Figure 1 (cartoon, rainbow, N blue to C red):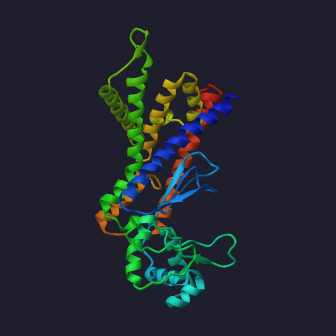
Figure 2 (spheres, rainbow, N blue to C red):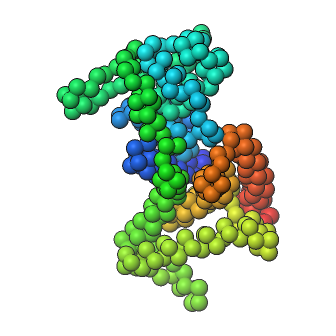
Figure 3 (tube, rainbow, N blue to C red):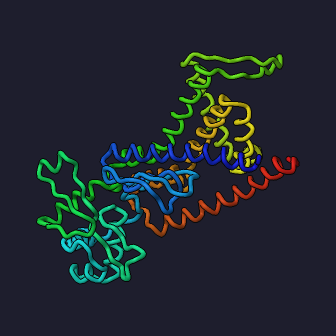
Length: 362
């Protein structure tokens, strides 16, 4: 039963915090006019939900986290055939890859590359499992009541529509992409998840210390005191804690402190074990634990390692300074290297947690 509760508590805490993190990316993207086709509670997979404003909101069976599918974040140069492929697809409504290649006078491979990029943009709907061939469809368009009253036209999925000005159509779609934004707006989208995690943690500290209060042990006398702070003091405590976590993470990059930092780190196993301990102590300690994990999740995402937010931010800075575009191949190599590094770190820390919490040897 204890193991079940550990898994349940850890799933709830991490699920909420990752969902909030992705919510930051979603809100920043929409604020800058970038299309977000999906915003889900849970990891990618089969989902149920509803669509509003061009975004599908829903739930997947894998509730450990969430994701926001921000359009136009694919790396590398754009396909030079996007404008022609987009116009061809919209005129047809539904078309195979070969149809688009023939209309545009390009190879099947070039047509496939352009169509897949349009799918990433949310400007096309890719093949389904029922399609025998690589069939693509123009997306559904559902204007609001005010837009319909102003003369906007609704289109169903895969319905042909007139294209009077292909360049204007392409520009309207391009303006809704992450890649169309200036550097500072892309940077805001990347760090928005981290900011939301930290703000949420500070809010929890205010609720904890200014509303509920927390029983804490005086390190000098050993006496247990019920601590209640005013909101400003609670906010100051929150920022002090964030600073402590930042110093802890920086210790990973210092050869003199890296070993100690790793030995004091925890994997999902350690988080699950600690979650039950804190939740068993009551609501106040459960809130305290959630705030701590929210800060850790936010700061760890700033590490300059792809595919973390910090890694993508470093790439954006490199592209801005060098005026060169990082290719998809290069990003894939960096992401693989980053995943390998994290896998090694996870296995080491997981073994450490097993020794500590299961066998009591650490």
